Image (cartoon, rainbow, N blue to C red; front, side, top):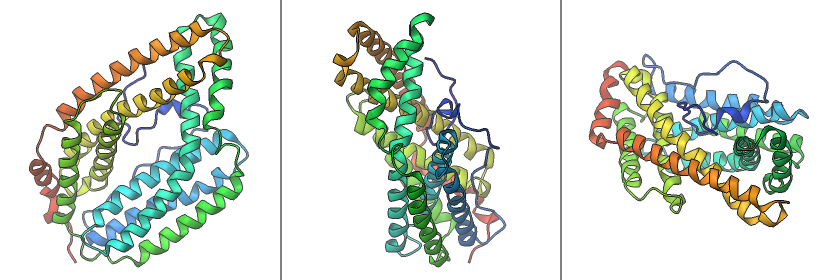
Length: 330
């Protein structure tokens, strides 16, 4: 059940894509230090929209592995876009930015159910590894048959129609981004925005960390994820290695809390559907394994978060703004 710890800033388990076709890893868009800052930010955001648009063809495919890969890549691109768009606040009309982000949220919600279903099935496979080889397959088949329908709503939808709707939303986002005035975007504003989010992350991480505080954990994960994506986006404006290392450390916190969330979904479903399993002892053993793993994850995540978030917001603002002299201003 133990997974390799990787600095995945979007929190998606890498083994959830094991069955998907292999593709060259696409690096996230970054702001170019030599370019006019507002226009460079616009280009980076448009690049993420274009990635999501390209994946619409895969989303409409009849091949499940290709759809899974498309969902994964679209979610990553949309998270990066939303994190970058947050840096525009205070520099452009808030209504325009909010309109773009609402479209992102609507698009992401269309993809969430299928992601949860796929990860849930992968999580089931990991939990079932505790059983002897001769019974592992049958127990896994029973578990998937009982639990998977809970998250299968999107998988049963008309994928071609869904892809067409998403394409329309993404194209509307692209038009909006072309129209947004980013001339007022500046390095100091970007540094201040990231430092404010850092302050919120430190505050959220100070609350109790346990399975009974899932809302609080979700906030910690969300803030750390957004900061990590923003740091990668602006890494060329400052000390690149330091910013990318910080983003990687935050990504490990995100990954651990994300796995705990997925195990929490599985735990709830196992309890709700206990009566449908032929042998209740199987459920008890899986629940025991899940509880142990969640305890390990939360302990590890809290330790990592305490270390990563130790610097104060002022230190992060200073670190991000180090390269302000290297970028052109409008």
